[in-house]
Length: 461
Image 1 (tube, rainbow, N blue to C red):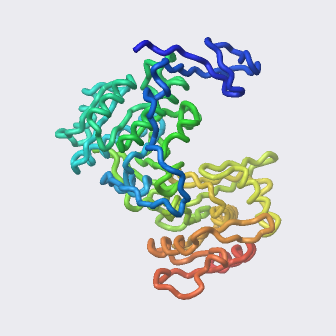
Image 2: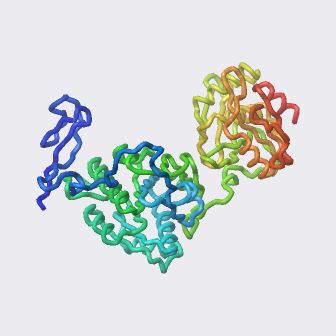
Image 3: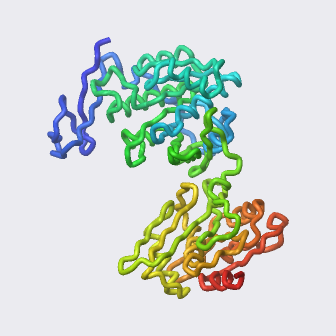
């Protein structure tokens, strides 16, 4: 079959050009022409068939008349990964996983696909960045010398699709999507056109054959997935690998999941034998102090459906005429707002002090439920007096000084009680309405305003 000619389409007006130009000839917009391919006369659509579609054509029916069925899942055997996926791999699903180089994407996927192969599921590992020998070396390093996972070192899309059609694996890993290219386009692998077209073909192959496809994606220096943003819209699930390469701990966060909860996280520890799930992730985010220290307050945050205990540390020191406000893992603009509320409604002035706030363990907290813990940690550091041993706090603080409830407050309190915490300052709306054995040993102080929280803390000194 003759090779298709390229055509360039404007993303602004939809105009076309036979060659690339810096300015669209139709709307005069700059740098908007994207390469695509024209179909030969015998081919009616971009997928090479007149009847190629993601599902067979059927009649139009109301939602009430359509039978709803649960998706069949295949657990990987790695509990933390299954938690993020929503219970396991879904038949015909497409998963995109991104992260910094060397953070452990290929390691985790090789462990997962080997576990699925041992459970009886047919698999395929397509590597475009490494040779088969390099993948085999990693397998032996991870303690899997007898792994039976089939490996295909290939970057040409047409050959990959042919192999998928011939072998019909239950799950296929494409490592990575930026290395795959199609002969139908003249641009280099990793370009916007190549990534978009290759992802579209692989997505169609997954939906039409029932093969679960996992795409490994590169990230930019800002941490976002490289390539067109439409890539994230095509797939069913988007996972991000987070963590410092100098630390042993890694987080996987679900940014998008059509088959499960978003913002769910899985916690792993990097070992000599690969990534191992952490059963008690709260221990990572808590510093081990023999005695309480000033400027430390533990809060309970929610990551997806999982409550986590995180230590918030604050350091307040004299700062001169231009005091600094610095936060790590928390919103810096929100820190400035909390300092203003603290001064106006609680009488705690920090206008001439440097204020540094840190969430221990490298976790990022975006929910406002951290407000109360941040303010109590700052006050503790300023006074030089530690909070009581076994103390936790959570709650959103408004500009008027009110303490607002946090979502799923009961679950947060149960997690704190389970881990042995004894004192909790929480929004009044989150306080349990009746006694519950799940809160045994936990003394709860409900508050409505930040002034009340400060009075409770001073009374506990």
